[in-house]
Length: 431
Image (cartoon, rainbow, N blue to C red):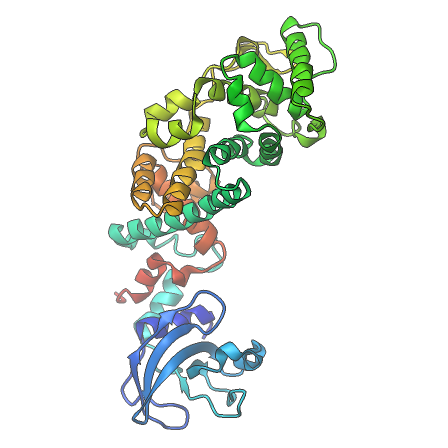
């Protein structure tokens, strides 16, 4: 039989095997009282299990392997965390396994005991050669199970993103204003220029920008100067003003360090995503919001309020330029596009909300995330297309973010049997 070890873990977790005359390899009667908690971290596979062997109740852990010899192959005999294993569950008992003290670990062999329909479903419904192993059968799964799987993977995705914010908050010694501002710059850089944007935000304190927020041109001078993107000279009056103002600000605050053009990527980047245009859009957003944190946490609740906050018209120069000194042949932008606005809500606002809820242990922020995601249109990318091809059509960003989480954390690493969808397919009765 060709199968992965996680299949045996599933069999044990849901007890998909014949338990009549269930014995150890030494013919000791076994009764499972408590399966244990499935451990997905380091250590034994099932924790706090309870089994009765020949009338003696044992409390400890259960370890699952395809072959008993895997105990040694995985170096468990050298790890004290496995000394408390009270039962070794294997497909084939090819070798006796001892604890560090020399005592034999009771072993049960599942070969010939697993229910036939479970085998059939596993082999028929999961294709591990495919990027989406259950793609050809996922449409058969009940909608409530698919929704539950999306919700779980979405929460895991928000946990991961919000942790980056909480790490940033710790660096900023608990300053939420500074953290919200830095996180905005990080997300505005998207993948290509996120590192440069983060460094820029850390070079220019939020409080200094707020002192000058009533003059958009000054904000641009500060940010472009510290970004190292201003030209040394220019024939354009507006750019000349920015250069002069930047030099004045640097002397005023005694800034000795700035980034350089080498920190930024223009090659391979669409003009609409040039760091120059993105910084101009950021300056406009900050000029328009007296308090960025309050605007995100208190003043904005739905898609249209965030559209008003984030889709702000930049200064006139950037309506006709992607970069300095090179006028565009047509009007560039009135602010971020609707597609970028959706990405900012997903990657900036929601992780910030979720992090805030985690920090203050307020669960309602999770529900706010879910509600807002259902107002945002579904994303369209190569991964989402894989689910659509499998006849699973997303309705909104709640669905697509959940799908991205499923793909990254379960489908791609082939952790299918930790997913409720695959679990549901495996346990279905054969027709």
